[in-house]
Amino acid sequence: MSSRRFGFPARVCTMLVLGLVFAGARAHAQTWQSTFGGVQTEDGRGGVKPLLLGGGYISVGTTNSFGQNNDVYVVEENLTGGIVWAFAYDFHGNDYGLDIQELAGGGFIITGRTDVNGSSDLLLLKINAAGGVVWGETFGGANYEAGVDVLEAANGDYVAVGEAHLAPANQDGLMVRTNAAGAPIFVRTYAPAGNPANEDLRGLYEAANGDLITCGATTSFGNGMQGWVMRTTNAGIPIWSNHVGLGANENFNSVIELTVGAQAGNIVAVGATTGTPSPDFYVAKFNGGGVMIAPDIAGGGNPSVEEMFQVREMKVVGAPGDLLLTGHMNPGPLGGDDGYVVDMTPVWGCPSGKNWSMAYGGNGLDQLYSGAEVATNCLPGFILCGLTQPLAPPLDPQQMYVIKTGLLGVSGCHEARPVDNCNTPGYPSVQAPMSPVSASWGIMKPVAVIPGRVTQNLCFTACPAVPAPHTPDVHQPSMPAIEPWYRDGRLSSRDVHGPDQGIAAVAADEGTGAGTLMYPNPVAEGSSFEVRYSLGVGAQVSVVISDAYGRIVYQRTADAKDGSGFQVINTTGWAMGSYLVRVDGGTRSQTKRVVVTGK
Image: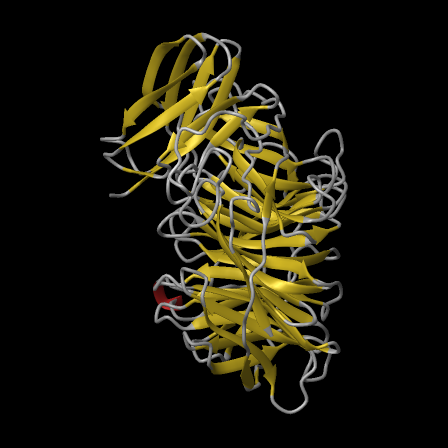
């Protein structure tokens, strides 16, 4: 097995801004549903996370609307469901985004897979807070490898899990750990001793003591596929492993360690089972030593088919310690394959352990892959992400689907309460030791970032005394043809690359030579940054900066005979987070984002 590291010389990596944010004020939105994508197919299989720095949300998935192949697709949404920025990342083959994590120091780490020379490799991609590429790594051999879940460890390392095919007929669980610069610390594959068949890892969680808890599926023990949970040291060495099931086919997609109250230290995994009258979602709880705590639960809306893709422990919005499960049910109450969310207690009965549930979508394919609490809005609730097929006029084949709900899962449209049933089989645990195999790594590979996006708001409700929503125009700009104002031998308005990236925001009107540059970005609180603009026409130019809630923190208008000039802006007193910078001059208007960080 090898890794392929790719750097980003100016000639190879060009960052193109994909569109403008909403022009109208829509601060303090309660609930909404939005779709994102182009004219072909998108999904949000990598899920959505609330941004800890500046508010808003970050989503990742896959698109094939902006090139000849599938590309990693990342969208940052503001608090009202509009785009802040959106990028498609192309590695010159088919590329898939399957998870994203915001980093404590700003920026994001993404995992997924990318095609390399006829095979697929696990992908790790680090981008900054404005979507610019910092570095990327691929890990794989001659067959198929993929990353499914990623996290930033407490010490700043990055850990991803997925699957590896060391031989064409067999697959093993795969875990990769790198430092913050992308240098591999270890690459390990996992399979049972004796007669291994097929294993994969799909969920990952860092325990309070630094151990890594992961889950997936195994077919190495007979009785079809079984759910698999494993705990390792921070070096990836197995501590214990357990496989469980109902004697049919089971899998786990997500795992967490509980942290609240008497349940703290227990482990919950969720997925699916075919061992009930109809295939159902499957929830199992283990103690810290890996022994299943009965009963486990299967079922949601019989006789429909259900599966849960993620579980999260609630701490600030729901009752502390309750669980948020996200997945799908088919058929659902809306007539198709519906996104499905369940709020349940960690000490569950059946059905008394369910607080509420909700289905989302239409009469086609709708699935949700992640959910998280949201406490930064006028109405607390949840942010959900997945895919939808029929809900996005003009009926594109499929789009990324993002939903902001209230406390009981209500978003205001395209939703219905399902009829919930469930079963409590309570099956015994079976211990199964797993053995790791280490691997090696190696060469570099380039990446390009390409433009294109469309957004459609499906519904929107606002808090009292808030202006009505404004739907943006679709805009796909190209790079500006303006003279770069900052050049130190590394960067210009045309060159955005690598960890030394200085110009993190470039916007342009195609064919006009108009552009806006900001430097530095991100900027430390209390420091100053410059906004340089070249609008191509003589006008008074105004610069207006607002925070994530729409509050104006800076506003100034200046004369610009040829539409060019700059303003120096000090950030003293600004809170850390994201701010929208809008430049207006005559008939031209551009909006970008600046990120204020700690000193």
